[in-house]
Length: 552
Ligand code: SF4
Ligand code: SF3
Image (cartoon, rainbow, N blue to C red):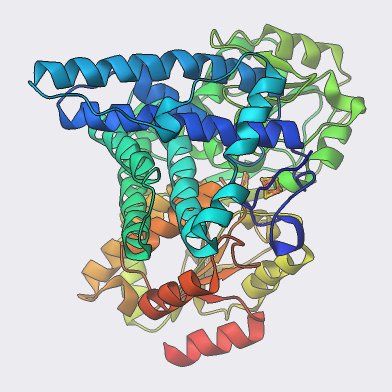
């Protein structure tokens, strides 16, 4: 059986996974995910029209967000759970159809008869669903619409998937906006147009970037309202003796719930991967048994989890197929799923995780007392803005580099470590997301008390980075593109696509992107990006640094 997926950076030969995903996704799972995205478009065809008539339904909105998030790289590998979502999708599409038709009749209009994705009824059983999915995959669109249009449609789709992940986190913390959901429906509906034009899809891509900016703002509000503003914090990166649970992914609420349920149980909680910035939130670090961070970025998890003598909780991407050695003590929750791995449901009862941690050996002794600094979100950085601005004006800080984005397994990603190491001593490095594990345990020192490495947080804290850049531009009376600031970005999955689109929406130029360019960006689309934004692939740290600093 065949599949076609080119949504992430590690896709086979830089062109597409066709037999099995490098991520481990098999053809059945890939095809069910294609079908789920397709049905979501159908749901949005109705929901968008209903929304234009003033009607909406929260269950429909949330379903589409969760469906898109489930198809992000390294989230849901479980065909059974995808089948459940498709069964649910069959009910939701009927509900959306009724919502639209009732709204149209109420408005005295004849409802449109919609076909394409709106007419699809998910079949019974995985095999039948896979047959349906096989008809509507990316390959068939490449054949009918060509590579450029299909690639642009996928750019919009992947931007929406990444944005959906952030919208889901915000929603879980009680922050939602009907206007945001309406935009999701509008863009998904646009993707069902039979003969889209290149310009229309380029505009939609930047529109998704704008949407993602609003969603990241909402998530920033959700996280900081719930847990306070991150504050600069020295965090332990070595274990302490005793029973242990490590929590990975981006969902702060899952960590909070687990911290409450483990209080007084003699278990130490560690963050992993993108959960590291959680250690800087006042209401999270108030739990004394949240002791530090374990390990590095997602792609090292198999080796690290194998060696971890406790339980493991995955709250979002990026999960990898577990080794048998720890399959019994790794757990998923939220939208993450892996066949054969116990899933913690919506009630967030983490008892099985706690029991697995208590049954495991735990760490036999304390590791060395090694710490790193985290917690330089917008609030913390703006709090010392005057010092930073004075340092720039006095020439003590010559340039800022934002070296951020996703990590991954490719050897070419050493570029980011080498780049950070070669940044001159009179420059400051801002970082965010899991790519920072390439250099966040190195010693960078400080400039007049300002640390040379400032960890802003998770990938969604790109919002914080944008606020910092805008504040600096304001202080210097210039635009962001005129600041002594360069963006050196690494991408892997679709959240990075969403953030990149946000930066382009904001008109940010001269971004360097690596380790390789997306397979779905065709030469024609790349030309549009280069002409309008002067985006370029990374080359070597030496050449890129010389180019950037020569300009500043
Ligand atoms: Fe391949 Fe990435 Fe798609 Fe997985 S998500 S199948 S690695 S392109
Ligand atoms: Fe990393 Fe998966 Fe993208 Fe949130 S955890 S940045 S890759």
